[in-house]
Image (tube, helix red, strand yellow):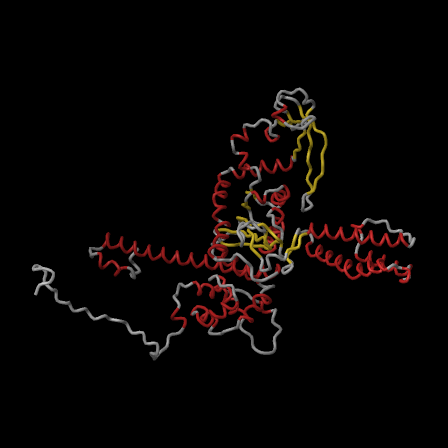
Length: 563
């Protein structure tokens, strides 16, 4: 039979092979059901978490339990579950509760126990407040014992992490002070006007800004004692009542705001410990300030060796407190500190040199000084010739700039600096004056000799062979860790409020990070061992055997294959 022409014949249909589908019987019965331990691989990270936590002393956590009453969940088990949850980027207590019912690894860690989200959150927020620092320290010391850390060098850096508070509940110090002073001036003027109307002399001549709520209250009481209510006009009675009911409570509110802020410039109404800081990324992507914390970490081989939570947005003012906490944690300072220019200050350099710490810490103008444009500029104060014996500078025209005086100045932290001032003798008529300076009189420069000496020392360290190595490693140490925590780990916002809550959260995340790095190193070493075993077996076959390649693996388990 032909179709579509004489040369096209109809093809017979070919028989299709039978499709084989594996059985998926969900109701099948197993004679010997497997245990959870059998379902977890031997090199799984959950086993490392369990093994490490089993070696730790959790007596501080146990001290938070009063005893008596109903039995409680094992705190060591709860700690394992929380650390493993943070290792897997699970931070919600409700999600952890769900994982305990669905995930095999969580079931294995908990021994099939199922604490609810309230228990998990209470353990995290209350029980770990006093013990998380000790747990973290023990983990780092275990890594030190295993030879993964030396604690001799710290690569330091900081980042801003958003608080769990509302983004728009901000209180600004300057605004509070402005409105407080305005209200006090208005109230003082009102009281003085009433005193003047009734011919009452006031002996208190303090300004409105110096007066407190108690001072205003005493003054109003004095008015009520000297003036009868019937003698007051309707408007005066109204003003006094409004002052007592509205102005004085408002002043008290302003005072509470200032007490909460302390030395800070702002705080959040829903998290009093949080300070509004400029973040690199914002939820609206428009550069808004957000309430957050300044998190400082030290790393070595990308392990977190130390951390601290601070309310100050600048890294410079956190360094000394941070290093003292490191000494309290490990009983000593590290030999070297490596950090960027955000930590380079006279106060910090003095602290490092006084405590025997090698300061591989840049200062602000370090990279600028290396440029040819900077070196070839003869008018910069740093490039002027200085006669140390006679204490004078020489300007580009060869004129001496004589010492004038010394001035004492204080930083935001209260550190005292000494600045020497030098002035040229006569700049009038100098042909280089337009390029040299723009002041009306003779040129004056300010020099901090002690800071310059520190810079010379740091510059020599940073340009040495060891300094170049530290500078090349710094970007891949703390910055890489922050990338793993914030980008890969999605840890961009705290869940708990206050300094204690954020310390617990970051402590858990830091422990989880270290255990993940440990697991990766163990897995890499196992892989390296397998590759070495294969290569040794392959070399054995090539050199001592005539067997074909198909029989290479016969020698892998032979204990003498590498001999």
